[in-house]
Length: 516
Image (cartoon, rainbow, N blue to C red; front, side, top):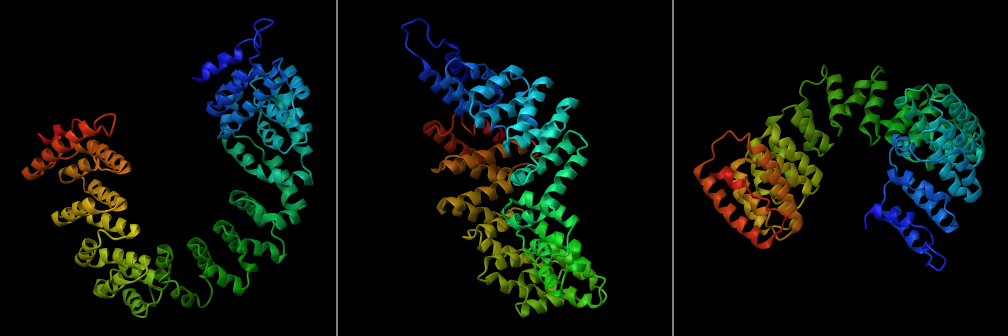
C-alpha cells in the first residue's frame, strides 16, 4: 500500500455504528507502516491524530511522529520540515496532560519549530522547565529566532540548564552554536562564551577528567577552548600530547615553550606528518637545527622531505646520493625511494630495482612508483610481469601506469587475465580497459556485460556508459582490425543479451552505430 492509503485508514471513524467492529488495531498497523516507510515531511499530516479520542491511538501517533522526527538529518531541515504543523498553544497544554514526559518533550521540540511565534514561545518556555537534556538542542536553535520574546525565552531556558547535571548535554550541543553563527548570521558570541566559560572554566576539572570519553568532533572543540586558557597543570598539556586525534596533538605545539625535550621528541616522531612538520617549524631557528633536519630528509611525508632539503640545500650538494646511500644501508626505505625519485637520481635506478623484490608490499609499490620516474623501461617490464599481482594496491598503480602505454601485448595479457582470473582480477582488467578507452577497449567492455557474475556485469555496464559519453571525442580513426573485432564482439554479445536478458534494457543497444 502507498502512504496515502494508510492515511485513509487513519481518517476512518473509530466506529461507524453501535455494533461495528473496532478498527483500532488496523489504525495502529497503519501508523507502524507510516513510521517505517514514511518521511519527516508527513509529520504535519499526523498532528491531528494526537488528539484522537482513543488513548492507544494518540500514543502510537506520538511515537510515530517521534520516529519520523528523528529521521531529519540536517539542522536546517528541522524548521523547513515542521513549520507548517497544525499545532496551537492549547494543543501544547493537551500534550502535557495526555502524554508521558518523554513523548511530551519530543512534541515540545516539534512545536518550538512551528511557523507561529506564539506557539514557538510557549514551547520554548515549556522546554525551559521540562528538565530534559533533549530540550537543550532546541532551546539553542531558538536563540537565533527572529521574534524577540522567543529569543528571550530561549536565553532564560538555556540558563536553567547551566548546572552540573547537564554539562555533557551542553558539550554535545556546542557545535550548534557555531553552526547558527555561520548559517543564520546571528551574533551569539556573548551567550556562547558564557556557556564555554561554564564548561571549560567553572567545570574544568570534570571536563579534563572525562575528556577521552567524548567523540572526536567534541574533543577538538573542547581542546581549543582549553588551549586558549591552558594552565600550568601538566595534566592538561599531556591530555593534548596523548590524544588519538592529530588536530588535538597539534594544539600542544601552540604551547611549545612549555614542552620538555622528551615531549618535543615525541612530537617529532608523531605518526601525523602535519604534527611533525609544525614541530620542525618551531625548531628551525634553534642552533643545530640542520642536524635535526637531516633526520627528516627521508621522512615518509613529501612535504617534510621538501622542507628538509630546502633547509640543507647549502650543506648537501647531492641529495640523490644521500638517498642512494640510505637505500644501500636499508635505512628509511620508503622516504629514500620517494626522495630519490623527487631528486631525479636516475643513475641509481638499479638500487631501486632491488627493492622491487622486497617482501613488504608497501616498499615494493613505492619502489615501482619511483622507478616510473627514474627508468620507464624497467618500470614497464615490472608492470607487465605483475599485471595480475595478488596485491590490489600494487595492481592499481600498475594499471594506472600501463593505461598510458596501451601496447598490444599489454591488452592481450589483460584479456587473458580476464578470461581466467578471479572476481578481483576481472574488476581490475575492466578498470584497465576503461582507462585505455577508445576503439581498442570497447570490445572487452562489451564482453564484461555478459559475465557470469552480476557485479562484473554491472561494473562493465557502468564503464560502457562512460565510453559512450567519451565517444564523441574520439577524433582518431579506428584501424580496420579494431572495427572488425568490435563488430564481431557486438554481434555475439548482443545475441547473448537477447537470450539471457541480464538487464531490463540491452546495455550495448545502439553501440553498433560507432562501428559502421
